[in-house]
Length: 207
Image (cartoon, rainbow, N blue to C red; front, side, top):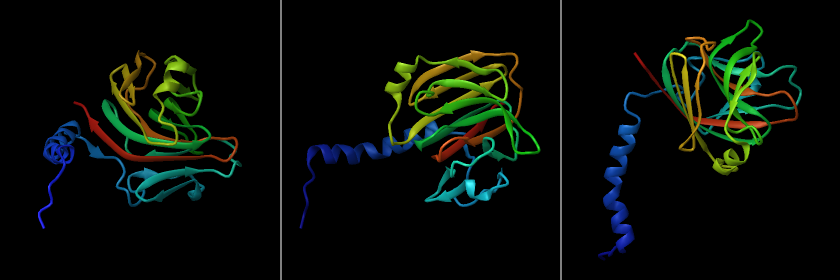
């Protein structure tokens, strides 16, 4: 039996190859930072239960008993780069650290793209200068996809850092106090029980 597609359906099929090519172009030069299966290339906190892998996603989950913020940290340091990540937070506070340092006790210091209600659009320096810059709070709230995946693109080159959130530039800062290289880390936060998820972590280093 011959099935005749509606015009919208036929048009969608025609566009699929173009969309696939556009996606390949957008990811040109990017490499996975997380393989979706295990934590190869990452340093886990002492409490291994804080970060797990579910359906190819990194899940940070606490019971509300943390003594300090804990992190899943890349073993490799990165200097100039563009990082892409999708994040979905159920509750609590989290963030994406970059150009940061990890202490022997697992504490991390350095700049962070904040992930939390009331803190979206915030560039924060963990264990340092605190709030460095923020996108207007009310405007940032309108960009958030509540209970869904949110896209971050973080570009660091020299002293210059640009952060895009769901397609909007929220941070554009030049700061000579930024370290020139450092780890990337995902945060679980002290306070009430929380859960955050990360996926599609991709990085492109720059010469």
